[in-house]
Image (cartoon, rainbow, N blue to C red; front, side, top):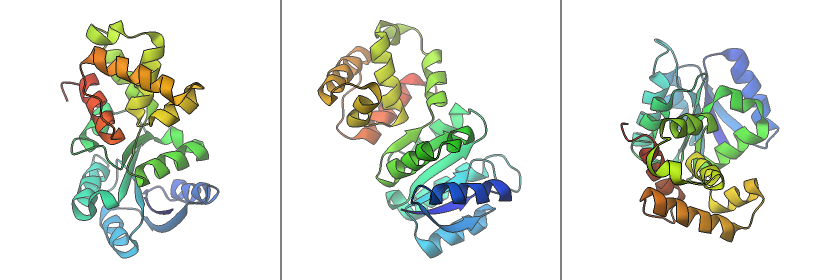
Length: 216
């Protein structure tokens, strides 16, 4: 697995490089600002670009804009994982606006667990999605009424894991149940929410997030 890492904080960047190495992920390029990121990605052809949502010079949405430019230039061949200090669900939804295929959005606190970070990188590299559980939790709290209220506690747990971008198999492993059980839950959930089931995980994630945040 080959990754380019864009982070303006030198110490954090060095720490992430070492952390990824412990998970057998090779950092083939580093950048502290957007122009360098774009150049390094073109030169190294990584599997995934990991970048901060806020980068120089204004520290607002440069990282988000860079992610869009990278997707326009490289398509789904390049996975994108955007990191943020704070829960900003609108950024996650903006990032997913053009499709959830090979896209992730995580809080920086999540990178303290090497396995979580590595799992997210591998998921987006494989064309899946990785949405921070805190973002999903906020969206679900905002949609307490209507069909969501009709879901059982177990169904809500499954829905949250789907929204994070996990496959039925991954959901089953997380919950300690059979994959067929998750398939049954998923069918009931999508039926109650009026969503069309899809075999494509990224389409499924996008449908769920759009339903949870209809004003986006």
